[in-house]
Structures are given as C-alpha cells and as structure tokens.
Length: 186
Length: 192
Image (cartoon, rainbow over all chains, first blue to last red; front, side, top):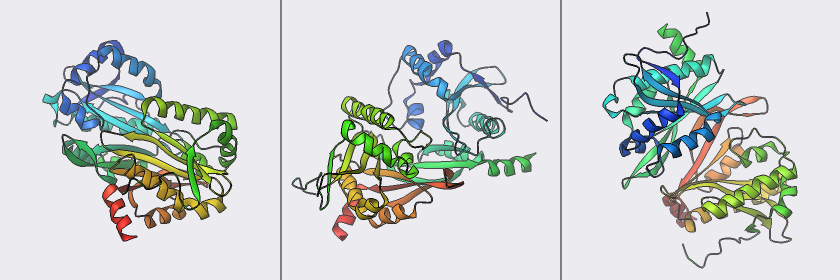
C-alpha cells in the first residue's frame, strides 16, 4: 500500500522551508560555532538571514531541502537535505544539522534520517545515499551507523579544526541494505 | 624539496597554461573516451562534448581560477613537438585544510600508457611542493585498475571505496578515492 505519510516519523516530520522565516532561524543557529564546525569543513562564518536566503533561492532547485519539525510542539529544530543527485547511478548526498543544541542526542536526527532514507529509496528510486562526517563528530557517526550507513573509507587527518587534525569519514547505504533492515524492523 | 626544481617540465612533458582557443577542439575529441569525459566534471553525466562545450567549461574554470585562486587548470604537452595530450586539473582546493582534489587525464590510450606516470608525478609535485597541500585526492571508476596500479606505484593509497557509485559498460562499479599525504610524498621521494 502506498503511504501518504511519507514525511512523518516517530519524533519529527520533514516540512518544506519557508525561506523568509526559516533563514532567520538558520542564521541564529550559525551563532553556535560548534554547530557549524560539526558539518562545515571550511571556515565558520556569520551570514545575515538575507545572504542565507539569497543562497537558498539560488541553490534550492538542485536539492530537496526540509526543515525538521518536532511532532510534540511543531518547533523547527534542524534541517536535512538531499543534494548532488546523480541519476545515472541513483545516488544523492545527505546533509543534516540539528540547530537547537539543547536537543542534541535525543534521537531527533536519527528519526529525520530514517524519514529521508525512506523517501530516497521508496519515492526517489535511489540506489544509494552518501554522506561524509568528521571524525570528532562521534554523536553523528553513531547516529548514521544506527540508521544503517556503513563506513566506506576515510581521508586521514585532512580536516584542521581548532589546530587539531581529524579524519574525513565517508559513509554510504545501499537500497538493498536499507530494505533488509526495514523488512526486519517491520 | 628544492626551489630550483622545475615544476612545469619533466623528461618528456610540459605543463602549460590551458588555451581554450587552441586546446578545446582536441580535448572535445578526447571526450569520446568516456573515462576522460567523466573526469572532466563531477556533476555531469559523462558524454562526448562539442568543442563549444569544452571551451565554455574550460573558460569558466580559468575565470574561477583567476577570481578565487582555489582551482588550477593546465594542459599537458609533449616536449618534443608541443602537442596537447590532456590536462592536469585541480578543480577545488581547501586552503583552510590544505587539501585539494586533482585529476590527471590523457586522451589517447597509447599516450596514456606512455606518459600517465610522468604527468601524475608532476601533478603531485605541484600539489605538495608548490601549493603546499598536506593531502590531495583524486577519483577513479572501480573498473580502472590500470590507473590505480600506477597511482599506488607513485605512493598513493586507495582511501575510499564508495560502493556502486560509478556506472560504466552496463554495470555499477565502486567509485574509488585515491589520496596521498605530504608525509607519504616525502617518504616516497626519499625511497626513490
């Protein structure tokens, strides 16, 4: 049976972004440099909401971008997107960030990832989903493993953050792996 | 590493500034080799390109190089008669992390057999001895044992195997990321 409830999970739902409102939120989250350093390998910077909006107005057509909304109170707590689509091999890259740091480690990111993988494999007909994660982001790494991603290798000590060097870890999940896990769970 | 080392000349090759007016037409012919076409851009589905498309693509790269100084594009020429055989491209460099992506591409199989190792050495030397990178990486389709062997011989390591991320000859292959650190480069130079 085909579900009309593709974007709702156990803790969160994924909703399209209202750029005008949400870019203010994205700019607020950028105040937290630790948040930026967890998913941006380049310099942490502060951008105005207007600049973020201009970026998304230009780029949003090439990605599937969602805000992560908590079910219990409809609060927008993070973002998740698929981008870099390669339809020849059925691949896309996923990026995720929970902007509200008081909600880190509570399963919201894992639930959002579960939703976007279901969307990727059952609606977009992708064959694999790819991500990279920084070695010091142990919470993210654990969450991605829990979601079914496997490590596919790493570029050793290529990231320089606060004077220390960390591996860039590449991970991927194939549809066959997702289906096997999903059929076990159901 | 010595400052007197010639970066743009080797025994048989010259790295020259890419000239879209001269080089694009020949490079367009190379794109019938789909491995060559794949190496030209990360995002496109590899297909033969017209000389107009190659010229436009390369002009954009040169403009980006001039404005942002985070990418470089060189033509590879054979010293003997200056003819163009391929490119060395650094499409992005992260100055913060001293990390960069590069691609060495030679269009004709016979010339690839003859000159790939020499061109690869020039690209790695430029990355480590001139750009000051501490790591560099390139990518290969998982069918391409020929180039992997040569890269490993040059001291590079197969760092990442992205499963089923490359399509060629009717089947899915892994996509390989093959990298090298500056320390490995220096060790390899001493060992030679």
